Length: 292
Image 1 (cartoon, rainbow, N blue to C red):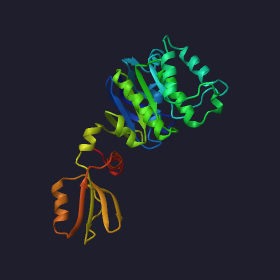
Image 2 (tube, rainbow, N blue to C red; image 1 turned 90 degrees about the vertical axis):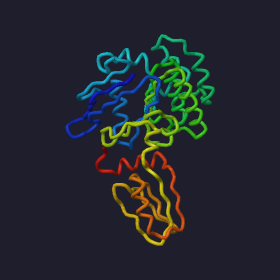
Image 3 (cartoon, one colour; image 1 turned 60 degrees about the horizontal axis):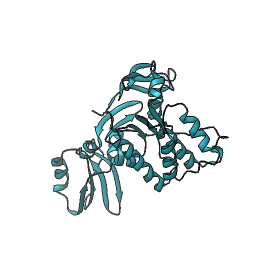
């Protein structure tokens, strides 16, 4: 449904956007796109939507070219931008009717249902809405015309935890109906909860594309040990070292035999080895100088 081939965007000679991004996103999957602020997430989304033009490379959405076929693409997508700037003098209801007028669809029932579930008061002017309520309005606007593809750029910012849960339920329902979802976020717990696959982007480049399951099953282990000797040091297999209350905690990504050798001649008072969180695995990729 979404395919890019060495997609690159420079804002000028020295301002890097994204570099040779190649992705192949399947129909009906929720595809996570993660990285810290400034990594190139929003640039990728805006380039795919032809809000900005690529410098080089190619990309297609539903087998349609993102530049020459952008109007047809927009007829089939929904988009939640990271920052919401709508017409302040309109009420929420007026804006939703206006947005729906660009599509040939029966949207009223879905508009009302989503607004009710998100506890959104459509009678208020947009300028009077809080950041969270503006984000709710963006959610309704992006979904009310039942798009085939959703582009979500930091979609939960401004939502309280209860509304985030409601939002996740809505997104999971959309997936069951066959909607393809491009989910860009720096909040790793969200990606781990909802996505099928994930791409990690660093300084404009894709450094890893995996299923959530495979990333979590990678050899990484979270180790917490209390011993009589301080034997832990930074190397390519040991990252995220923390020391507190006599314990050493770290994420280990090497072969288990090496870890056992590190431990075997130490007096171990306590030892716990568990699966790390996605955030800890993610930091492993970001701390390594060379990611293969």
